[in-house]
Length: 469
Image 1 (cartoon, rainbow, N blue to C red):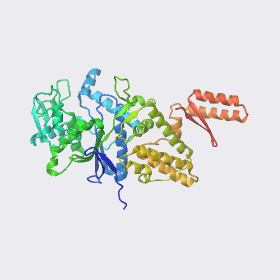
Image 2: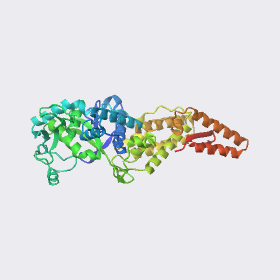
Image 3: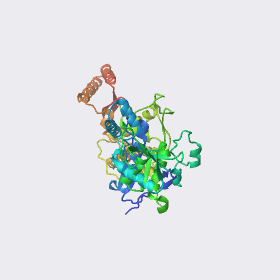
Image 4: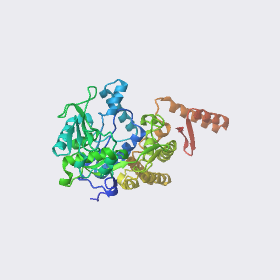
């Protein structure tokens, strides 16, 4: 039996590259923070979804699909949700269900796999209450003025993930810190709910959970007290993930038992729009749904993978144009080899997989994909073309790319069943005109097609068409 290849990942906790070694290779556990469902997600929200989808694919290839448990939550109780529902004049449950469905539709267009588990916060209130009770019992939390707060001074390693100290936090605290807090850094585990807010009965009164608590409780419920890997955007390092670690370790006694809440932490970098931070006030707030009206999902996906996940990503029209052109080149190689049946290839044996083992180096993986495409184009026998085509498809699948039929990619899916037939008829008429040396008519037909958004490509094997991009 061959040895499992080594996946190296940059661990935010410690700030160094480390070989990924799961607790149990038969049960690899991953948790990634999902959306707060009060609006459609923007393109920045799409970055972690795509990044960790690639990680999910790599882990499935390494350990087998049945041995990887990937949880991505839905936050469906939050102040922003309450405000959006009130502004819209609709029930909170109606709003959260609508935007949960919208999230699923948008990320499906990006070609993402479904997570193994998708827990919702409102379905885990009892585990949250039990977690708070455990933290109080162990001396890490206290009730005050209808709230329950985590005592950050009770956890010695608080700040280890973000590199912040309690002294710095106290010095930087605002003067209006709630007077019921023992330390300015203490954070809410439970808070009172008003009559028009969602709430649940608890030992501390009618209320609702704090955001940080939700993820810890869902992890404990579905994955256990210690998981292999926790991921999310860089903006979640502090305070969200820092607070998750404090809660998780305080509840389980990490110091007493030498355990960790999550053994590896991964965070993707920020996304900017034309070099500017995305903001509604700047008018550059780009919803994923809106972008999908103008670009295929694979174009957006490739754009999101074009930079290393830890690096900042500048999202621009140029980025999208480059991604579309890049995919056109890859699909062109597949279209040229359309008559060739691909040879089955193990994805782990491709150079794309090798690149991804190096801390998900997607730029190197994309470069490898283009080299494989070039090798397919240069292959001089059907046997080599079959092998090269199989390699290209297997490597692309690891990135979630080249998932369409090449003809569909270039010509587009359409509800107008007569379009293809009409284009083919006009191409035949053009060919007849050229054969009769009636070049004026042939040019007129080409112009007619261009006006309809159809481009022609004359090849030794005949004329091909595609929609203009």
